[in-house]
Image (cartoon, rainbow, N blue to C red; front, top):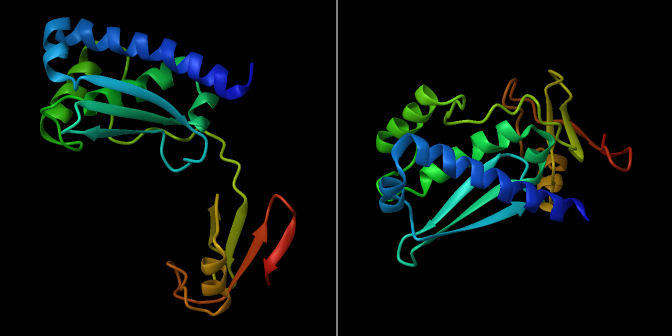
Length: 183
């Protein structure tokens, strides 16, 4: 079984637990009324800047919950926590992380072991970055998963400033190949 197949199986099992937690807190009937019609679950192997995302297709009656592959480095409880967060976005009366979504998140946090917040705690996730960009002036380091040729050229042409010191000279290292792209 490949990693993606294992992740999908784990995602499906954790989704069932997350749904049961939500139903236990709000009641099955209310959850049925609030949620969009159908939910498609997906694992995203390229998303590294977020744990999950819910895409609602209001006119079509379904939602997609997509979780990052890096989330599977964490415990099932942390995956369930993320899934609860995203499932609350499928509720028809929520929009963003305020109003009703916040009320629902607080209710789950108050009545279960799960703590639903706007942002996931990513301190336990190890991201395998490919590029390291370092400011030559202040030493600020920025890691990127992807870096386009256009963006590399912007660094080379000194069109990008350091957000900390406003200097415009950088080094770029390809961490996978262990070579300097820009010195």
